[in-house]
Image 1 (cartoon, one colour):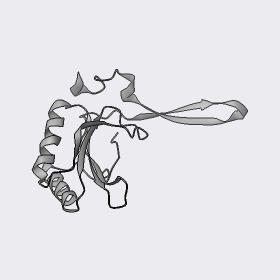
Image 2 (cartoon, one colour):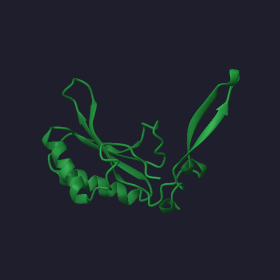
Image 3 (cartoon, rainbow, N blue to C red):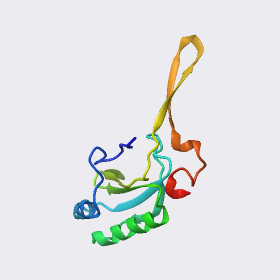
Image 4 (cartoon, helix red, strand yellow):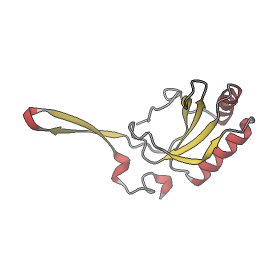
Length: 142
């Protein structure tokens, strides 16, 4: 199952050259970038781990790409995404966000059904990756 989160989630994975073009576009707009990673890509998990600090002072896409590649080396089996922030509205707003790395195998989710009081039925998503301990959820982590 392919996780679909972010701007280009329904397209094939971007190449490094295409990522560089998107980073260049973000920097031309004055949007600082940051890199985040996780091994729990649940749709409601909006708090991914941050790789370093947001890059407010970079004007060259090579610096952002360097940080992406360093994060890839450190976490080869995790999801990694790039964020670009637009502060023109007077608050931090995500203007661009997309996944730049995925694990080789994406196990997907199952739908859990729970019957509650008064014959109510609730559904929740359970990622199969969470059946394994943190740090060993994907093949590249083991």
